Image (tube, rainbow, N blue to C red; front, top):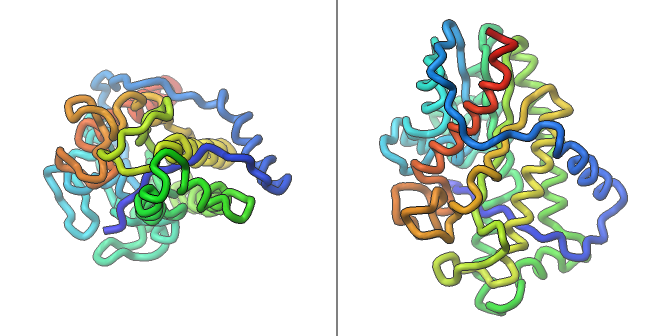
Length: 308
């Protein structure tokens, strides 16, 4: 199972090409345009006839969270799409999210899970998409940073590793993922031309203040803020791609600050690399999925007045 890793990155002394800086700058300009507020309920409004399709990776599918309803994709019936569907009383609900999915799996099958885009149709009314973390390589990044931490616990060996060429390789991976996300959104609009499309960002995995919690999460001290910033950078690019491809962006990072994997079991919504609650390592637990559901519902409620 290809679990996501903790996004990362303080951008240390980046010597990116002008196009790189321009792309990130473009995303920064977008930040105020589509801000999503924290969790709010939908109010129980019945969305008669609404047909909802959920696309995504393991942050969507909810690995190990009871009750697992698809072993191949590690999909839970308590993941955020299931909770959103229940709250909105949708007429139909199709969840094809799958652990380990990349943008390519929108077109290519994963075991028994067919190409995710095949779930869409002209009658689809609502689509949520949460994808990109595996394109950047969350799992391998986590493994690399854990392995390197023993070399310099007080430093930032992971940041140094990914900046050895003078250009931050994780930032480059994120920017290379942007056109892949744009291609996915174009395909979603082509197949579901009447649907409202939401791009769901990734939650806060590590302390937002840059502090660490070794050995509970075995990264070097300086790599906690680095990896935090990498996840923020991915979300920033996702927001920009959504804006330029006629989709709403759902900010799940801000509402989950203070509930990262370094917090006590009672307070955390993201499990550490050795989960205490049923969830994949470095993944949302049931409370994290519920928090993302509330945020998606809040975003949807802002548009319902114009659509119902």
